[in-house]
Image 1 (cartoon, rainbow, N blue to C red):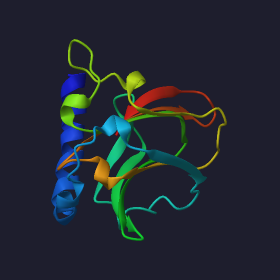
Image 2: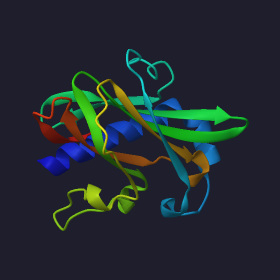
Image 3: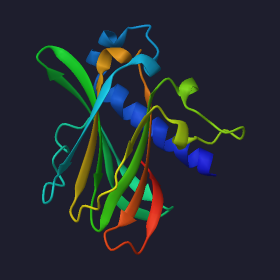
Length: 175
């Protein structure tokens, strides 16, 4: 069941990213594997700015903690910066949730690390960021990846460990 939910979320992200940015897909023709692409991560307090990316995101999906808690969202944007295309993948928490750790996979479907049963293994995803400080606000983690790192359509598996601000509950989350 977990595998089906995860694959369904990944498929939705791919469908939206491919539908909304078809004109950019032709620019993604590179044979470099995704493990070689460079990325940067930035964090910032976005208190009161929960709708920051909604106008420019080509895909947005809920960040679901446990199996039924809405902890925020994950946005995917393709942005042109001085003639260079980048894919931004942004984790944004809301309410009383904060990010403690993020794991991200972006690339071909066959490259997602999986268990023998086919479930994703987020602990071995290529992109990982740990957080030790609790931030009592909405919080944003943004991955910036060169769009040329991808061929055609690509899959995104966004995993996080989230916690209530007061420390009363912690969950894993998928977006």
